[in-house]
Image 1 (tube, rainbow, N blue to C red):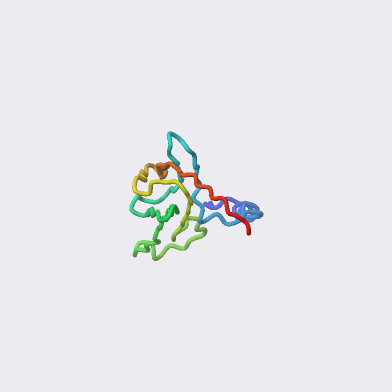
Image 2 (image 1 turned 60 degrees about the vertical axis):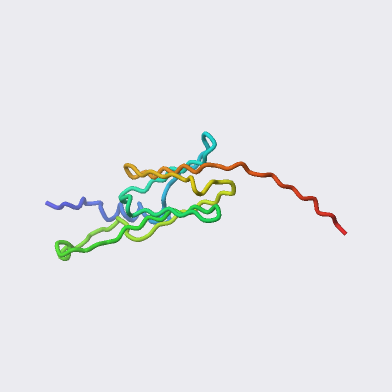
Length: 131
């Protein structure tokens, strides 16, 4: 009896055709509500301690890093397929009118929710005279 289905390898070939590698993706939704920008990112498989948020000059960077820690129990494993990704993934977002000091974030069940308060944007328009 085999644990690998008969068509296992052939299925993998067809599954991978025409698809770009999707290892470094963090799928997200970005929306405005109640005077705030909101970002919801899917980051499954990470712990809160693995995620870093930084904001500087209106650019919000979200980085998640997972290390592949090999222990003695795993040294005799012979992998047939490895799809789980280890390493660092990053997404950045640019905003012009935010209060960087008031950004809030929460992480629950693999979903990172970020609330970014908007500031009042001062419209300034300068007419430049042509000589």
